[in-house]
Amino acid sequence: MASLNVGNLGEFLREQRRTAQLSLRQLADAAGVSNPYLSQIERGLRKPSAEILQQLAKALRISAETLYVQAGILDERHGLDGAAVQTAILTDPALNERQKQVLLQIYESFRKENRLVGGGEDRTASGPESEPGTVSGQPGTDSPETEADGGPHAT
View: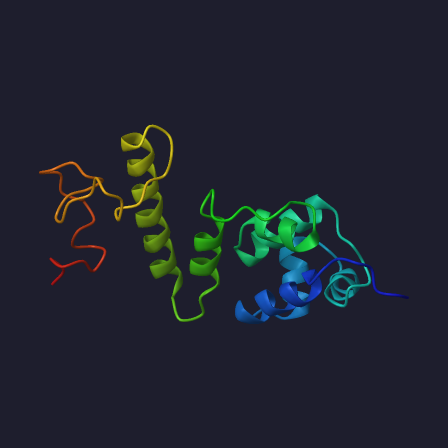
């Protein structure tokens, strides 16, 4: 069989599987696909449907959007929804599961806070309205994660 044009999806899936320390069989079982089918996807011989990609993403604990981009189904959006950050956190082998969940919760709380303050758009703390010791430019507002995030007040 000739390889299909699925970008680097197969290589990306293989790398994610290895990072998650899963065997081909373990990932196939977790995603609900056959072992030979997953092997063909990794070798670039099969192009999986969006549904299969979603199942694989769930089993690998990464965003489905990341796999859709790799498969050429979606155009890459540069961080509009934080998928790249979430994927980086979830696939970091140096972090344990508890640490990953805490980081994701903190990240999402900051994004929600910035959307509320910024009128719907994410804003960064480095903008001109931010002042040292404030959250999103609001004087006197302390972040609830100041100590939990390893910030300057962490013990």
